[in-house]
Amino acid sequence: MKHTPGPWTQLDQEHAISIVSAGIVIADVFKPDDNCVSPPMSETLDNARLIATAPDLLIALNDAYEELNFDGTYTVEEITRTIDIVRERIARLIATVEKGA
Image: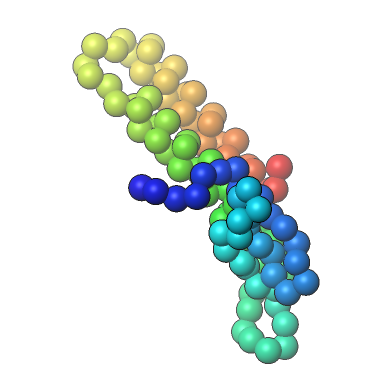
């Protein structure tokens, strides 16, 4: 998969929240206005935050896939520890998306 590398950040514009990487606009999430049907502003901000976090989410998924790619030679303790590490990483990213942390 080829995409614009992260980090992606949010830039608050007059009519939209732009998702930007190295000065390049990746996407615009338009703010509510009278000219079109849009989600409320709180949902617009959440959508922009989710889009901006996409590269980090993809990295976490790839890391999880690699960490959980067991070849049958691991002990139960090693597997449990690996699962705990992956769960912690995923929980941090979910918190970032949900709370803007």
